[in-house]
Image (cartoon, rainbow, N blue to C red; front, top):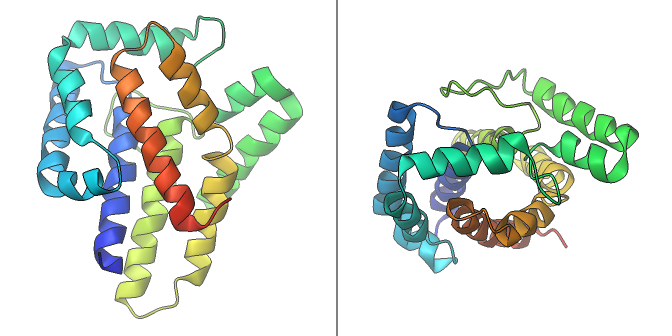
Amino acid sequence: MSVTALLNLRHATYDLFADLFLYKFYEEEYKQLQEKLDLIDREIGKQLEEIGIRVKEIRKVFSDLERKNYLIEYSTLFIAGVGVKSLIPVESKRLFNLMGEKIATFKYNDVIRFYKSRNLVMRFTSQFNPEPDHISSLLAFMSVLIEEEYEYRNQGKDPFRIIQDEKNFATTHIFSWIPDWINDVIRDPRSKIYKVVCSELDHWLKFEKKYLGVN
């Protein structure tokens, strides 16, 4: 696979997972997400399957269960956060519970620093506005960095600095807590749709870790 094709694949995959973790409260948003899954599977499903990510499995679980099941599962797991271990997918909130305020605040401020370095204000088309360090925001920012790398390469510029930013951001704000959180979601008996989504995200992050050369 060419560098350009791989960058397009990475950008689309981060963008898809960012969208999958946004709360689709309204029926039209939910329908658009299903259409996006269909499109991704059609366009790059085979390439993703070659590296272990099965978009078909995500499509299937969304089609097998009704929208009301999705709404209950998402709100129960990720908004209410009730359970043995909080599953709210926000880095600072999870770290606050596990490591205390000082580390949580440091990590949150570092996310904001990354966004400011790109003069970026995170905007989503969804009615649900996630925190800057919500999993959707973090995965969306990775797609922004990858798009920047693509543009640099297209213009014949050296993308070294951007690649380092990708690696540093992923190491500090994705690989550092999301795999552990994924395991908690998969083990939770209330998780059906997101057991599948998180399983595929786990495969994707393992690929990315290897691709970026992170131990």
